[in-house]
Image 1: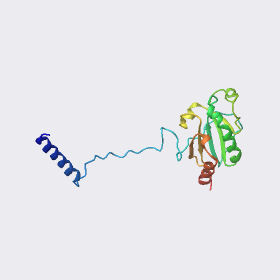
Image 2: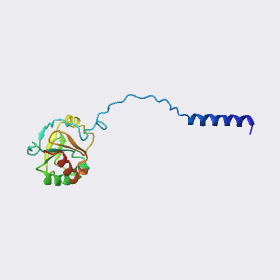
Image 3: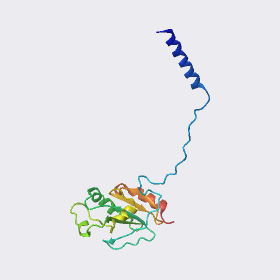
Image 4: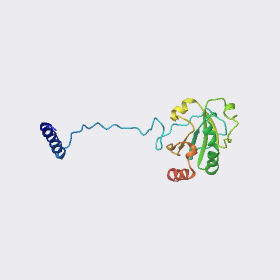
Length: 179
């Protein structure tokens, strides 16, 4: 190897080593902090205030929601996962109906069509129709989707209702129920 190349490489290595060993910290431009809203992809998350419930039409009797949690189960008649989750929600409804009002919420489709589906379990909890705008208010981006709202109007669960276990529900009721 050429002696000039070797001397140049040695000088570069020594300079790099010396620079790396210096106590001077590199200058980094700080970016201003950006406040982020407690939303993920525009969805309502646990801890956020829920909008006021707007019902276009009750397909069942009108439930007494005063002082209770409200579980809104957003679904559609062509959604097989929604229908497959009904047995689980029916079970939770029967066990916790004194503390939680479970409501099947669908858009303003023909009520006759909504409950004429042949496959799946029947809805054994309350049912209502909503205008599509209500789904926008609740930031529902896909179904099945459940929001569990405490008596103070705060969302305590946002996700698939089938994934809301009995233990999770008990913990939420214990932590956020009326005291």
